[in-house]
Image (cartoon, rainbow, N blue to C red; front, side, top):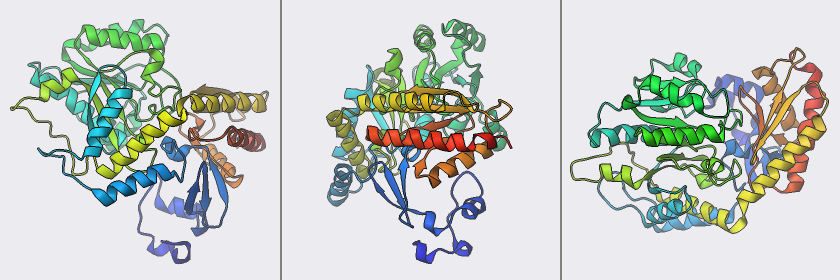
Length: 434
């Protein structure tokens, strides 16, 4: 569909998390994004907007990357598809990508399975953990334990692993075999052992955690993550880290697990893995887990037709090489510090500011209404729309408003983002909560 053929009555696409009529009621054909250049998007009317949300955190290299596009094009010309679902060899590019991923991953993650999304990666990790214990003679270890208010995706098992009760209420009943612990209330991790002892470690296959919550940028304390690693090792429980959002430099290290210095048994990746240029997810696992499935009598049937798609793997390989060549992770830390410091300075003393939280290239801004409460979702929508009118794209969740720039954004562009965001917040401030 081009702007010239736009017709609300024949708009066949059903997309987004709100009613399509709502989307069409606030957007017209001139609002279609038609081109991307670097950190900028251009709509059908020619207006430019700085993408300080990096797509949805996935466009870590920005738009118009000739290296990624050429790698995908070359792979599509040479070999667009190989069936790797059953017993045939994968495409060479998938084998090469797996090798390079394991080279940069946390220690011990020596095997890779590819899928499509972060949610699919979590589904695969859950099946992998349960299958591991069936295959090693401990079929009663089936429970998957996560944290309340965590988010791991929208496929059913991933949703069940998530601790968001609203999702369970809307889409339930959830599958059995999942438990959720309270979020940590201190920085020591001392409470975790007692909580897991109460669940019964002999019944637990895996503990799944987000090292940093993507919804609000709050990090799990280092001591808590280390306590989780120690408990899982001592009680023969697999530790799954969901890094679909936190991986690929977003939180200041290539993978957020490096912040606390731990290595999981299973790690889930997506979003930045292809820099947003194709759909791909990955599950990295230890050799010990792989060996439990590597006999003539075992199968791992969690797979789909286009897992390890060669064109997507080519994009991911080009992305990894860009990270190595361009020092993107340190630059992401620079961007996060700049945005965080400037926003704190520009919004200091304003009654709407609840706080600014910067973790790597993730900056969460907590905003308050006139009664001192977090601003509503409607307020967040108004803020996002006002920022777009000023040429800036931001992101928000029910927990916070965030700036999550491409790691290739320039410091001058980051300065523009901070100044524009602060000016919009200041202008809208008296209207929050009205």
